[in-house]
Length: 140
Image (cartoon, rainbow, N blue to C red; front, side, top):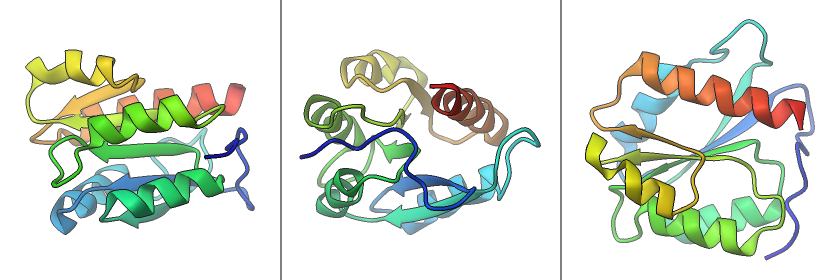
């Protein structure tokens, strides 16, 4: 993998990769966050991904500002992918992992993800975590 330099978006939008093998989970994330989760942030552009190889390809290409990875995805879970991305991409964008339950937050920490939100998704909790990560990304 190569260097995915900080904020390489081609427009004033922030690109958010959403990975899950389950289309309904991807849809829940996109609907929970909407086009603009906070007035201080630019609009979001989503890159929906259903397989691990495409996650790796998209992240390696750069231009992603945040990755939301489903820890419950099969056959490749988001926590393992998060760990791989953090190990292999210089200046990896922030990662939020969706965990199976609140008690799995320690696994997300192992994966080096910056944040974790448990299933079932709480739109407010998800938005708060995403807003915090994107603000950090923009200030870097």
